Image (cartoon, rainbow, N blue to C red; front, side, top):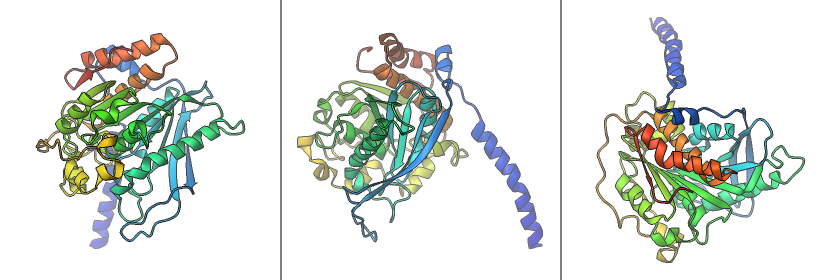
Length: 385
């Protein structure tokens, strides 16, 4: 009897797997002629390679039962155009807490098909592969990880015997991060002591940014795109998106209506596709804690230099968050709109011609919302480039 039941259960697996693969492969499309055109993959194929690099100049600090190491191991992946084109922009993707380097896979593959090189790697102590549960305190060391990876890539870019030789333009580098990864990208872009001046543009996706004051963003004034969901149950929209938008001088805010926090991650359209709101699972993973509660566990102001560096107490601007909405925007559509906005924003900064930069900026701040107004809102602060 038990064997018969096992056989029946096994027989169901292919059907369930088939439904899963069909669901994952399902296409989504934006509204409007320009959006549909811009959402097409680029003309070149995409190749990727994995790497494992060791930084012997900085330690992985001990915590919990992890004894620490005098070095840091960075395992990552590079996506780039399959055909050798002229040197193009480089995008560094920073993953969120308890996540991994493939969190932004949809964005990496799309941008690589349009001539970008994209690199992402697992942060040693905040990824899901951390040695003894992820440790949020290590965020202070993550800008150094970004700097180390950039050094390695640009060294390969200068080596005539390397596959990356002259594929990257060192003057066109951007950083993007999701959630805690947004903190990393912001610190790497703006923090007076931790910043890397090679970063010329930044994208913040659903990041807890209320701790950054206007002073933090004042110098340098780097072009920034913020992408947030107005019903995010992990990082409250009013606390973080609206507050940071007022403080960043050169900033555009994309608001996704009825979006979720977890919906920005690649896993939301695969492993979590059956949930009406991916944040229902994310909230369980964070044990029901809101972002401010988690942030207050760590002395981020003290770790990052406090008010002289523009770092505020995360709880100073706290307001009540919205309850979990039952039905959120589909993750595939969040990915689509994030991709459209990120590509247009990056091209508005990095495209070679003035005409292309202008057209990309105009699409981002005008056309994207005009064609998809029911699902998103675009709030530009800077004038058209």
